[in-house]
Image 1 (tube, rainbow, N blue to C red):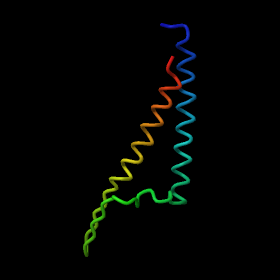
Image 2 (image 1 turned 90 degrees about the horizontal axis):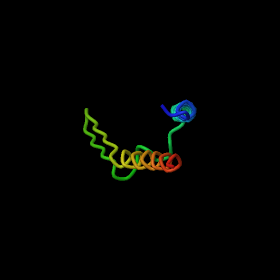
Image 3 (image 1 turned 180 degrees about the vertical axis):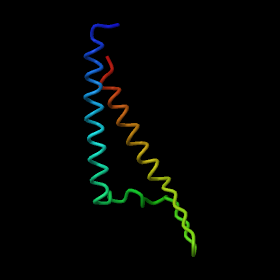
Image 4 (image 1 turned 180 degrees about the horizontal axis):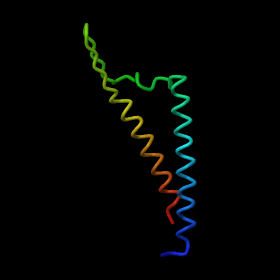
Length: 81
């Protein structure tokens, strides 16, 4: 075991805690206000009939996926030695 292991683990837990708090705050804020345009982007599939509605936010999924990928890329870049 590396001597710096407890420090690295503690640092990871602090960063994970901050990220979880930020996500929680975003979810709480999202319940009170709608994120502008998210979920209603051009390219999202909406199929409506009299008694049926199908909604698949494909473009929204791509945008969120890109944002999460960029976030993890930046985190990996910052922690690279």
